[in-house]
Image (tube, rainbow, N blue to C red; front, side, top):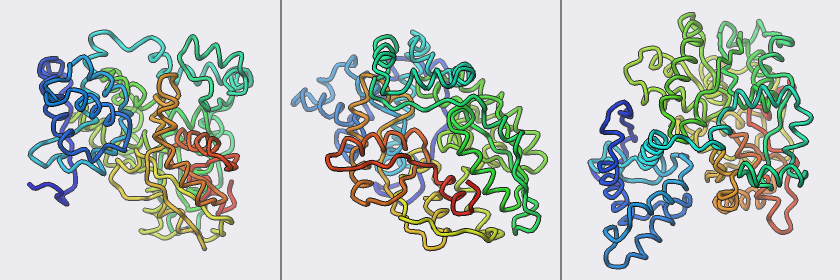
Length: 445
């Protein structure tokens, strides 16, 4: 195996049930091995703040290099990692099957798993990860919740910053009193009986974000699939566990994986495809769950039946052909490819999908937005997150297309905030998921 090989990167299962996984001496040895290789390469210097922090520590040690860096300083490197996977997927020449076997994001995850096991997830962070509970409670009082979390509300946002550590200027998603699951049951779209893909059956895994924060994404997906003859069920047992993964709470993630798999597997057995509406959730079902539970046949079978929503529309277009009726989108589109869509190793499916629209003008931005789930809204990270995402905002502003879109709804909000901070730039009022633009082209949204 040589540097720069064209072989696809592979990932090893996480042996998180083994005592060795939590051995701090072994972890420190592996951190030093990997960090020393990163120091000698430095290709990832501009991806996120983890690598500049690491290289600054090593440079400050002078001739001692890695030997001069204290293990206690490693935490600042770990804390800056958003688990975006871009170093693993796009930059690192030493990922497996290379003999040096580098998986930087999963090494950061191991560090956090040891922290979580030793000290538990910090209280505020743990409350932020309870997306289902938060969605249900906030949805019951959605107007009040949205008033309180609006960044124009300096009173409540100042309090949130002081008590919860959420930066007062970070744009936060809204809540809805009527979830996507409820809306789908009350107003299901009519399924075309003449579309080329009629006969397909799919379960839309609603995801916590779409279910509680942005049902419009789900409604757009339902409309597009119904137009294409796909019989859909909307199912939402609970969150995929990505928020818990970010904090290293691996037992909680594994429990969620098993619960969601129990709910979805009967549909898989009946021939349904599983379609996830947010890339991070699709990544969990396809890749992260099988690495956590490699011996669970249900998890493996579910991963093989799962599609990202853009990937699914492209699959229909390639296999059966799309239903007629697409009309041009005026003004062009700047499309941000979400990191967790790229990490699925499926190609730029959102770009492929939007280019199926007649006369489509799609410019693609392939940089991290800097948001990183809940990471980018925290007081200590918000300005860094905007700095990491500034090239995306600059590129979107330079392209000046009418529509700005991202497969990651949180990244979309973050990109708009980045554009607002650019001098002389008038940011769009909204940034949509690509499936919403596709639904507009069909006239179903």
